Length: 408
Image 1 (cartoon, one colour):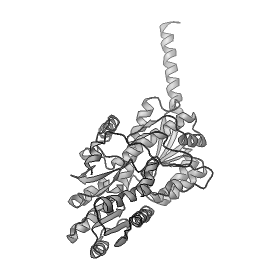
Image 2 (cartoon, one colour):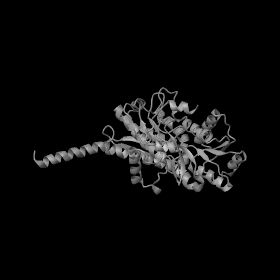
Image 3 (spheres, one colour):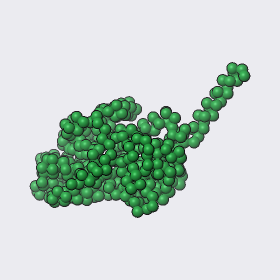
């Protein structure tokens, strides 16, 4: 065959292969708040997902097919999340869904994906009930790689009551499902230590004056404020204390690490501490690569991710799904679910190395030994404890016994 014909044949084969690769993508829905008060979490999650997807596609995709992200902004609204879930099922025909930042949106939306037998990988929403919503069904299609509130609340209490010795604590929680379910978990964890909060106060999304709630906590003699809310309102708590000239420690859920808390609270936010599955420090080669690639690709202000936890968990969620699809050899929902429950090969992530992270009865990948405490210092979140900083190069892996031990 003449050289020109050989070259033409090769070029045609390459073009055909590229066309076939592009024509048959694996669609994965990405749902999160990319606008509004929760957006620092949502955008960071989405960018982590994009980064992982780009890496996987550059390496040949999954089953020889590229991943195609179908991104939708739920604006942290339950009704919008429901519409998106229906669109994912009926119009986009997605293989799986990642995301859900807000517990309320997750709980409102997941039913449609559960009914359609489409796996959901919650990579940020932490409400304890999220992965148990359908546990009475024969098969549960909801998974998670975030630290749920049944882990975080006892950690918060352990830090405030046991390690720091505060006996008079107040709880300030927002009125959403996230805030109120978290408050319940906090009260349960406090009760296990023989502590009753001196004040339990609620606030709404977009509230800008926390003076009434803070005055009740102050008058009750609170030595610390335990929080469950998101960045903008948490900043108003810190600003309210500054306004009152009353400063006590804020110890709360992981959302105290959000950029719109740190930036809006300014000096008043310094010292706030919270559980973290990931702190933006290059403590392992994998984490360094992730941080470097993220900063290079998305160029965040001051080289600080708006929500490092969301970015890292978003990144890991795609690798977990890709591993399950590869193992299943299929994009069929039931087969992916079964593969997730029986992953045979470890998945090296940024948060942890996922070695058999799920089972039929356990759809939460993160256990209590994995998160560490972070603290706001110099407008960034750093390790709160020297021991955690020293051991940060050691990857903490799932230990199911750790959850029970935390509650003792």
